[in-house]
Amino acid sequence: MNKTQTNQEWLKIVTAYLNRQTNLQELNEKGELRTQEILGYVQEQSPFYRDHLHTKAGSQSAFKALDGVAFTTKSDLRSANTSICSVPFDEIAMYYETTGTTGKPTPCPRALIDVETSGAYVQNAMKEVYQSTFGTMRALTAIMGPSELYSFGDTYGEVCRNLGIPFVRLWPESPRVGLEKAAELITDLGVRSLICSPAVALALARFYKSIGIDPQKTSVGQILVLGELCTPEMLSNISRVWDAHCTHGLYGSQEVHAVATGCPEGNLHLSETNYIAEILPNNGTNSDMGELCLTMLVPGAKPLIRFRTGDLAYLYPSSFCKCGSQSRCIRIFGRVDDVMTIGGRQMFPASIESAIFKAVDRVLGYQVNVKVAKNGTDELEIAIVSQVGDQSIDQIEGQIAGDFGVPVRLLLSDQLDPQTETGAYISWKHARIRDCRLTP
Ligand SMILES: [Zn+2]
Image (cartoon, rainbow, N blue to C red; front, side, top):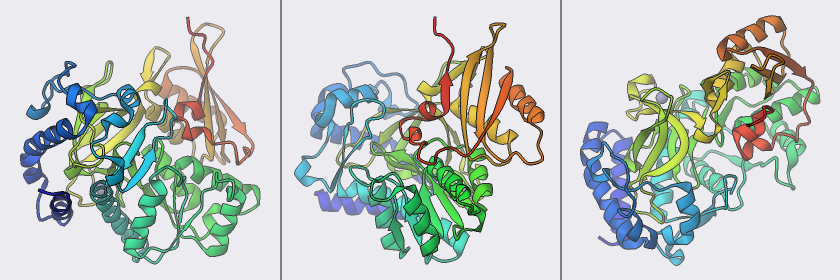
């Protein structure tokens, strides 16, 4: 099969699945075969994989074709650099890079087949979500994310064009835009939908409040979040702060593309045709939750085999969500590296965030300091930007302390400087947690 035929074949597979001409079971039956095909493809095309797949002992896998196949780690990607790619750069569609927040940036070229098979899921999801919120695609949308070297702006720009969704690119952290200009344009143009990170959604809300505008009274009726950890509690918090429908845009990265997309019910559904997803057991957690490990099945510019994403995840059957999608739901609990021990217990980033949002009604920003109390136990100092309203501080502190099992002190902060929250682009932990305990 030549490249054009392969592209068409793959688009047919994805479209048939999204249109429900094939179901998940039929897809699973083909899983082993597609895995063998991609293993053959990378062994032939990628100088890195030619040696890598069977040189290191991989762990067991429930998927026969992957049993004993070596993992690919982020450190492998950095050392392999372009030798991991499966097509020469003259044949790719676009070149991107990782942000380099967890080490040296790695090359992320995409071939047309990558763009189209991944984009089909984003497009399908956007259509459902816009239909559910607005009943139409005619809702002016602000795409608020970086575009240089990153796929975010291209992916959403293309999907908006395909669906006839009018859009404006507003990246508040671009030196030519800024938060003030972005906020001004949103109200002036009557933007109805935002696509941004949870941090940007909250920073914008804080900015509006600081200039006397209630975010609930703006034209914004929908927010799609992506780019960092977002718990169900954070979703409903943003939804309350803005009085807008809020769900996930997508979960993925420059490396692995759109792994899952958000639905109107606020869940993420796996892009089933494009990946084999394994959950690797994590020490100290229950057996079903663990590190997400992905094998990319699409024969594109840089398919990764048994790639350890570094994210903690849990897979639910599709019946978990009532939106009607036949794809499984995936919930992300933060990075494996961001798991902390507090009061002798393992706490996931998601459990820390959930505990705060469950206790406080509307939060416009939060930060946690982990300290050692006088008696030697851990204690938490939690700074939040919030109008606590009728809730008593004692009551909130008590509730959060109950979740963590350590004493909690709540500090109500004033409006933060709207420009401050860039940390979230480095990592959730970097932005949200200060660990002031001395490490022995
Ligand atoms: Zn759903």
